[in-house]
Length: 478
Image (cartoon, rainbow, N blue to C red; front, side, top):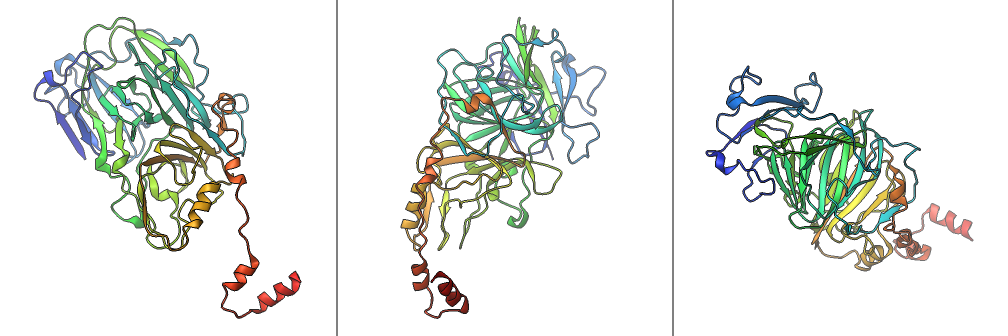
């Protein structure tokens, strides 16, 4: 599907103030081929790269996949800009170096542990800190150089990016704000992303983050070598979960004029490099294609749940997935736990105790999480790695069974938790393990779980007839 956005008057969209987000327009759809122009006629007709583009613009393609990828997987967009993005000084290592960004995980820079980990919410820094300086890696696996793997980051910031833009050459960012809105200027237009929404910033796009509410905090999943897509619905059918129409992409907007000393900060192999230029990178007057930043409001998610017995697998809450070549196995899933009704009969309704071949990093945007009565706070995080047992804490378990098997339907409200789930075992960065916000008492939430086993009670619940197995067991016990 191709969708086109036009604006009748360039004065509606042609602004020189990157901080102005008062009049945003979006197109909707996931994976569509879009076209958008800030000035009527700025898009070439009938071809991508004419000898002379309308209004003297430069044609530039950005490719999210290899040229020869199958058509159904191929992602690329054409940008028509005032000056091409190649017009800058050579890149140099950023000084000072960042030091807390990782894109290749091995024994030299990270550690493994099967222990359940949890972090308390991180404080917003006192010193001026923008999105780039406030970004740090928690854990990950694989390598951006090998184009396979992921990294999980968090960010804390208190100031907008000033006269600079960020570009991630390593992978796609899935940004989950927890505190404070983000105003994100991109080469395709502007996005406003509030807590309870997410944004995906594909590999290679330049963007700048402003903080209209001041201090901000959130989570980021980065994937190497692939892109997010909507999960298959299987027996659910044609509808449900995240609807394609609820994904929003920006419309063309541009800045023109001189911007002396403008800096492009590029993340490349986990390291930061800078290059100077004399203009804003957000000088794209028109664009078309299917490789584009986008946002999604998590409140629009249509959850599915049990209607008779047992607790559904969390896979039914998947918003986006980055698949591997193995069917049904994800490099990284983004799963949410939104407000919903619990109605299962004779069922332990919170998530069951389990060990998983996948590794699970959880965050909390607001409210509480149904499996943790204490300690898991908005802005905090937890990590349960491959085959590490986890599940409801003691208070949650005791409160649940105290309700009895006749507990009526009730609704979980004022909550939004999420999970980044991956088939790759994460390695944890040293600063995350040594963080003063590490909850060293996390394990205690399960220590209070006591045995409820009662052999006599099991006998009393039988119909009074002893089977041969029952009699043999009584003889053995005697």
